[in-house]
Length: 288
Ligand code: C2E
Ligand code: MG
Ligand code: MG
Ligand code: MG
Image (tube, rainbow, N blue to C red):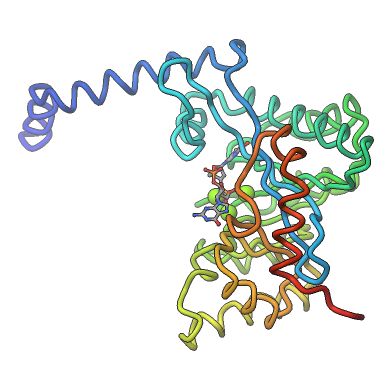
């Protein structure tokens, strides 16, 4: 129809759009080779126990170090990888690398847990269970150390999802729901899936804490989690004020720039002393 034709013409003759398309095509081609060319790396962001100030674990966050463009955020290339059918390969690399690194840390005397993000498409991947099994087996990591983070997906079949997750849970691996509270179906996820942990989306943490509604919502999420026997992690914690608020609500774990940014594996260990020092100044351990 005419409208569509006009749109097409506009797109065709607009140099900025063409440039945009070319950039995207280049990015696509580069992404297809990135795994083999070893261009991915994992960063690790500590998760802090709000009662003791100890580092309980880390979340693995992927980075693409593009040879020309430098570091590219997963927010940019993960959706592209999903679209191109590359997420399975990337996801497998992430899982193997994160398990191997964490096992090495555990052997060196750092008792960290590890959280690995799964994208929606990976959840419906045929061989997900065997990938998780082989990552554990090859690395020798204790299954209890591994946590998989899932997010809500529009239209996902929760029954199929729960079957898959139950099989993974049977290995000893725990399941966490990321960005909790932002989806349209959050309560059904809680009801139907074998979850161990819930991550409160930053939008709830960064709100105005003098605003009754934000306070009430975070309190409700923490209470709901306690009722369902789920561990709670607050994400995007950026200020001492956030920590004070979270301690009041009895949230167990916190993750955010206030404690540490995501760091490369070596950097994390180098900066561990400094992170622990900073953390102990923010969190005064409870005496019971
Ligand atoms: P996410 O899983 O919700 O990860 C939290 C994001 O918040 C990370 O962004 C982290 O760097 C950022 N963040 C942490 N603390 C703070 C803070 O205090 N303030 C602010 N402003 N941001 C903070 P990142 O690393 O860019 O990752 C973005 C998203 O990309 C992740 O969101 C996750 O959905 C996805 N992602 C990252 N790594 C992987 C991966 O290995 N596989 C898959 N499938 N997705 C991944
Ligand atoms: Mg996550
Ligand atoms: Mg999140
Ligand atoms: Mg997310």
